[in-house]
Structure formats: C-alpha cells, structure tokens
Amino acid sequence: MSAPFGRRACEVTANVASGGYRIFSLRDREGPNPAPGQFYMLASEREWGEGGGRPYLPRAISVAEAAPASDGVRLDFLVEGVGPGTDRLCDLEAGERVWLTGPLGNSFSTPREVNPEAAGAILVGGGIGIAPLAIWRRHLVERGIPLRVLLGFRNEAHSGGLEELFCAGGSLCPDVRLASEDGHAGHQGYVTDLLATMLAGDDATSAVVYSCGPPAMLEAVRALCAEHDVACELAMESPMACGFGACFGCAVQKPDGGYMRLCVDGPVVRGDAVLEVAHA
Amino acid sequence: MPDFCGIELAHPVVNASGTYDVIAAGRVFGDALLDDFPFSAFVSKTITPEPRAGNAPRRIWETPAGMINSIGLPNKGLEGFLAEDLPQLAQLPVPLIVSVMATNREEFSRLVREVGDRDEVAALELNVSCPNVHSGLIVGEQPTETEALLEVLRPLTEKPLIVKLTPNVANPEAVAVAAEEGGADAVSLINTLKASAIDPATGEPAVAAGHGGLSGPAVRPIALQQLRAVRAAVELPLVGMGGIASGADALEFLAGGATLVAVGTESFRDPRAGARIANDLETAVSRAPSRVEALHLD
Image (cartoon, rainbow over all chains, first blue to last red; front, side, top):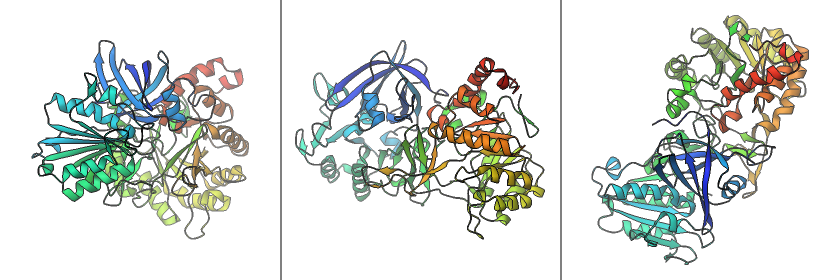
C-alpha cells in the first residue's frame, strides 16, 4: 500500500523512559497500518531546522509497534538519543506535533516466503535494533509461526524496551532470551553467541533468521547464516536524507558491485543480497 | 503563467536536478504523486554517456541547516535512460528537462543530439561541473571552456539549452556571459558548494569521497548573491536555487531576478515541498511590494 504523499503532522500521545531508551507514540490519522520492518521519516514540528543549525534532516526510524484505533493508527517508536535528531525525538512532549512521512520501505517476509521448507523463525536483535523485531514478533505469534527471539545489549545504560515490547503479564515472553556484554541480563557476551549455538543445533536449517541491530552485529549474523546455509533477512540502516528514493544517500553495496538504495530497495534485505554489512 | 524559453509553466517552482527520483517516488506514494505533482517542470537527474554506479558510501552528512553530499551521479547511462526511464518520465503531467554531462565534447554532443531529438524532452540542462578530459579543467569554472562547449552543442538541437553554473568560482557572472555568448537559452544556479566535514567519531572525512557539495538553507545567501551578480551581467532567463525552503525564500530569488526557482534539499524533508512553496509563493507575492508584483506570477 502506498504511503500518503507528503509529510503530515501527527500528535505525540505519549513519551516514556524505558531503561536507557525512550518510547514515544504518535497518532497517525491518515496513514495505513505499517507492515513490520517499515520505517518513517520523523522530525519535530518545533526546534527542527527552524532557526538554522541541527537537527535539519528528518530521521529514519523503524516502527516498533502499531495499533489501529478509532482515531487513526497509534505508532510506537523506540529511540536512543545519540545525536541532535534523536535527542530532540527523545525530548518530545505529549501534545506537540511531529512531521511524519511514511510508512516507507519494504517489510519482513514470512519464513515460508523466504524458504518454503521453513518451519519457524529466529529473531536476533541488538540494542535499539530490537524495535522492528517487536512488531514482527507479534505478527508471527498471531500467525502461529514458531519462533525464538534473541536480544542483546551492550550494557544496562544502552538497553531498554523489553518491558513494553517483549513482555506479557509482567514477565519476559518465554520465547525471548537475552545477552549482554556487561552481563547485567542473560548470557554474558554477544547475542550472536546465542545464535551460533542455536544454528549448530540439528533443526537450525529449518528456520529463517530475521535480524536488526548495529552493523557489526548484523555482519556477524549474516556471516553465521551464510556459514550454516540458513536464509536471513536483515533490517539495515544507512544515512538517509529523504526516505523515498530522492537523495541517493543510503547506498548499500550489492554483490554485483553496484549499489542499492536502502530506502526503496530495503530496509529489509536478504543476507545474500548484500556483499557484507559495512561496519567500522 | 511563467514563460520559460517558450515553455509555458503553471507556476515558477521546479526541482533541482538530482534531488527527486519521480520513478522511485511513484512507487512509494502511488498515483497521488502525479495527481498532485509538486513541480511545474521536472528536471531529471544527470545522464552520462555510460552507466555510473555512483560513489562508495558514506555519501551524505548533515551540517548546520544543510547537508553535504557526494553521490557521484549514479545513472543508467544514455541508452538505459532512453529505453527505461524516458518512457516513464514522459507520463509526467509537466514538461521534462533532461540534465546531461560528459567529459569531452564528442560525448556531450552525442548526449545533446540523442536526448534533444526526443519529442518527450522540452529542454536540456547542461551539467558543466565536470572536467574536460583533454584540458583537465572543470568546464563550468572556465568562461572560455564554457563558451567553446556551447558553440559545439548549440547547433545540435533546437531545444532550449540551460547551463547549470557552479558556485565554486570567483566570478560566476563571467561564466554566465560566456554561456550567453555561446548561445545558451538560460542559466541555472547555483550547483552545490564544495564542502567538507570531519566525522568526530573517526577523525576522517565524513563522506567517503573526502569532500562533497553543500546544499540547504546554509547556502541560500550565497546563492542569492550569485544570482544577483549573474542577473546584472546577462539577459538570459535564470533558474535560481540554493536552500529555498519556503514561499518567502522563493520570492527572494524572484526579486533577485530569477524567472523560475528550483527546490532541492527541502524535498528531502518534505516530499510535497515544491507544491507547498508554489502555493505559499502566490500568497507571498500578493503581499509583497509592487516591484515584486510586477513579476506577473499569475
């Protein structure tokens, strides 16, 4: 389904702290229900490029959850303040308005769409990248597709969103396992350690892996899946000015040597459709 | 209705080359894009003789009130453009202006001849911010190179030729005069300003190419000054651009002597920016001093 043409002002209905992150909600009266993996371009109506300075360009943020309501769709976004744009989004107050364009980009495919033999899904998220996996997890659960969720964080300060996005009845959903580099939650180490163990199991090749997180983690996931011949879809990130194919900024190298535009050819990309996930 | 080189346009707002891919945008926004098309003419991204993949990332970097880009002109090349993109661009509800660039006169001639021959094309914009492989000089930085190129290209088509000026020169008006002498029908300005930023996380240049072009409101006063200098030097119609983000901004450029204005970076922030600016411009003109009203925007 097409996104409405142009940006539209949406009211902020909530903004709560969740660990080191924030979760803010918008009421979108005009847009369609987004598909898991899609993103929006967001900029606050006030204090965004008005008097010059930064932030200036809108920020591409994946939707973490969406809930249709009588007065439009409620959109939830998980953000961490890492620069002038995300800092401003973290400071949003209920009642103010946000310029929004979207939903943009493609979405995750079901395991059977990726591999007709697939029996289930493994979701691997890192840091703020757990966001699109939350809405995707709910869709998979609603379709009765077996899944496991592996989520990793650097440390306690750089974690959040679990309670709101991956808990039910006050406790972590039983399909979710955690890893943290500082050991504050779950396995001490990388989330990809958990994935490596899982892929070494007998039934691993019957799964499709879905992943979103920092580039080094995504590259590790891509390489592990390639090694075990397991199909994967990566929700990637790339510097993006427009979100609709105009600026050509979000180039990602393809195996044939050319580039794709992540905004219109992604952000969800098959692991074998990228050469490697570029990381520092 | 502005008349631009004999082309009647519904309003004075067009897009800057390379800042709007209507084919991709049509996939994202559907029919609404054509029903509510934001520009009165569409300027294609620059077409080169052969396909180009574009530069390695990182390609863009946000700066105060602007951005630096080093995209590297990715395009399908002349053959791919004519076969795949032109039939789709011909469906647009507005006249089509095709931007072309080559690094020698023979290739530039081929582009102008083959693109100019197509009925779907209303005018050509010459991107001269490129080196001449024989002289090594950036054509658009040298009045003599610019005039010599125009003298070669002018006889090849009857379509209007617009020369896109680079701002990275001491005297853009001298290049504009050379374009006029060579037979250009119009001049557009400004292209992006050469610029750099350092990524504080790495200490390395923020875009992979080392430097890029600055655009956005940060460049607007520079663009306006260059527009005024060129206005004083040539009789040609001018397409003014550089950080236009509102109707009031566009009005400054019209008051400074532009026939049309182009919107680029602002479309990244607002895909409908062109329509918004055209609409606000009408309002702004109705409130502006009589000197600007005399521009006859209706």
